Structures are given as C-alpha cells and as structure tokens.
Image (cartoon, rainbow, N blue to C red; front, side):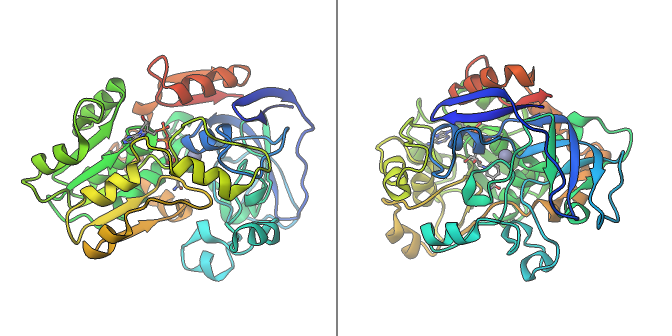
Length: 389
Ligand code: NAD
Ligand code: ZN
C-alpha cells in the first residue's frame, strides 16, 4: 500500500510499504477513506518529538471501512464504517473504566522505553513516534487498529466523511479544551491559536455558554475564520496581547484562557533520537511570543488555563510565581476522545455543529507532502487538509 512516512526533520514522503496485518486477536484492519493532517503532526515534522525514525507512518486522524477482524472481535464487523479515536484505549484498565481513555495503562507497547526516558509513559497513539507505542498511523491506504471493540465507533448512515472525520481528534479536543475552562454563563474566554483546535474550542465555548470569546493569532485569514464563528479577533502582531486583553475585559483579564498553540513551530527541532531535554529546552526558551506564558499572565486572578496544545519533554520560563499567586487552575492532557464522541455526534446529527467549515484543502495521499508544507507555513490560506487515500 501507499503511506505518508517521516523521512527526517522537515521531510515527509509517500512510499510503498507492506500492508498491515492482524497481530492480536482483538485487532481490526481498516481501509481508510479519509484522513487528515494535524497540528500535532507538525511537532513530528519539526522534530520536536524525539523517537521518530525514517519510515514511520504518520497520521492519527482517520476513518474508513473495516475489512478484516481478529478472532476475538465481537462488536465490530467487516463492512462497518467507523471512525478511529487517536488515543488507543484497552477498555479495561482503571483509566479506561474512569473515562480517561487517553491515559490508558495498556496501550503503549513501548511503555518501558518511555519510562526510562521521561520517568512516565504516555498511552498509545497511532502514528505518533515510538514513545507512544510505535504504531503505524492512518495517512495510508490501510491501518491496523487495536482493541477494535473498544475503539472503533460505527457511524450512522447519511453522514459524510467530512462531517465525522474530526471526531477522531480535533473536535473532541476543542470541546475538552473549552470544557476544561469550566465556563459559567456569560464568561469571557480567550483562545490563543486559531488553527483547527482553536476554532473548535471557540465553537465549543459558545456551545457551553461563553458570552464572549477573544481569538488570538497572527494570520488574518485564520482570525477571519474565528470571527465568522462569533469570536472577537486579536492579532498579536498588531496589538500587544497582554494590554489588549486587559483593555477588552475592564482591566480584569479573561475568566479563562486556552492554549491551542502548544510548541510553536520555530524550526528548532533536532529530530531522530536526539536528546529530548536539549531539544525541548531549545523550543521553549526561544524569545518568540510564547502562548502558554502569555496565557498565565493574561488570565484573571482565580481563573483557569486550559492547555490542549501539545508539549514534550521539559520546559522553562513558565511564570510559576504568577501561577501560584493568582491562584490559577491549569487543566491539560491528550483528549479523552472516546468520552466525547457520542455527545458530539449528536450535535452533528442535530446540525448544532458543522465541523466541515474548517476544511480548506482536499488532497490525494500523493499530495500529502505539499499539504504538510502549506499547513506548516500557513500558505494558501490553509486551515485543514483532508486526504483521500
Ligand atoms: P495549527 O498549527 O494549525 O494552529 C496553531 C495556531 O497557533 C496557528 O494558527 C499559529 O499562527 C498560532 N500561534 C502560534 N503562536 C501563537 C501565539 N504566541 N499566540 C497565539 N497564536 C499563536 O495547529 P492545530 O492543529 O490547531 O493544533 C494546535 C495545537 O493543539 C498543537 O499543539 C497540537 O499538537 C495540539 N493538539 C492537541 C491535542 C490533544 O489531544 N491535546 C489534539 C490535537 C492537537
Ligand atoms: Zn490530531
């Protein structure tokens, strides 16, 4: 089959690779009909996540048709049309039982390696380095999926791929990003970053009762998307963010702020198996405006900082003094996608959320490297690339 693979820092390409096969009796093979490029993939492209090797298949936002199931799979059947949440959940451990599926204890085949490097092991994620299990991703024609009965969500007929694809990641991520703000009716929420995650955070914040959302970015075309969703745009290259946020909130600051940026793309990644401490320190100590730092400084006293943005390794220059003395709450994490799929699917069916509005490009798998380029550099008004493999 054909697949998009990591070839080094800032290099991805389409290669012919072996078809995936069933390895465990609980696996299923999915023929992929739609897949997307995520801001999290840019961290891999940038070389910010250390354990990538040439040939690793990228992609954690994918859906398609089940073409083969292992002998212990009961609920999922060949022919089912499914979406695949990006975090892999065993369905049985303490975390899965408590609806914390992105913290599953059993889904990372490389947990020991990760623990040795960082002192903890993240859970399994498709197409997201050997640190999260080394599982092949879904920017490909087929993918092996694990614990199929607990992970694959059947999609009701009548909904298009475009309507449900983002349930695999960024729609629940924006939703959890807003939910973590504990929004009270009428609250003002500031969202740093107007990429796909930021835009879905804005949509969700209004759905959850926010009175006002201030959307921060430097790309006018992305700010225009945010404004179309009802947010007040703030361009941080034209206005000093901290001053502007004060001015717009009567001096108090927003009730909650969301970091939908994560590790900004500075091109400082070292990639490969490079020293993780050295590389994330380079990323986080750069003098560029840093969304998380600014989020902590700008939120009102007693407010909440919600961090869907992805970080890796170690960071410095985080204003812990402000964090403590302002009595802030911070909530973060990879998204517990499984928990949110049913309710978000209902919103889509009822027409209360239209996830398709963020799609800017539809490309073939062969064009995926171009998709990475325009998404990374925010060229050609790129917001979200959907690939048809
Ligand atoms: P993206 O690159 O499209 O969007 C990031 C946006 O942030 C860009 O528009 C950029 O211009 C803007 N930005 C950069 N620096 C900024 C600053 N200082 N202030 C304000 N805006 C700034 O990426 P995306 O797909 O929207 O993803 C955003 C983040 O969410 C990434 O870190 C990604 O890894 C993360 N993510 C997390 C989860 C999760 O489960 N927690 C899931 C998906 C994505
Ligand atoms: Zn993603």
